[in-house]
Image 1 (cartoon, helix red, strand yellow):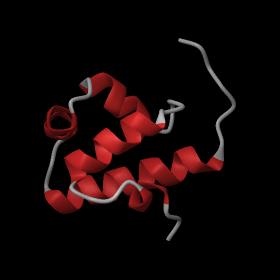
Image 2 (image 1 turned 90 degrees about the horizontal axis):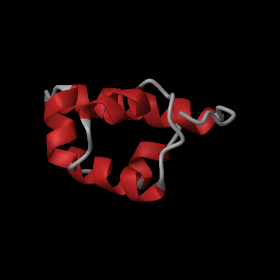
Image 3 (image 1 turned 45 degrees about the vertical axis):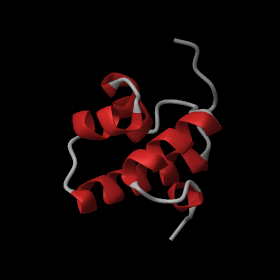
Image 4 (image 1 turned 60 degrees about the vertical axis):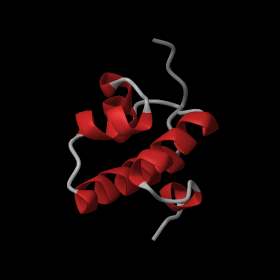
Length: 75
């Protein structure tokens, strides 16, 4: 797997994914299914290991039933 420099936005995305997933009571597997994304890929995004595409952010947001920008907001 090609590695890119990890930026702070990856950590924000990961934190928000974990928080929203827990709030909805979803496992990573359930969120992956709802998002149409492979579970291992989703897990690596949630650990801030992946440089995720904007299309996949939209898919994850749909699975979490939130607007995509909420995944990138630093609270």
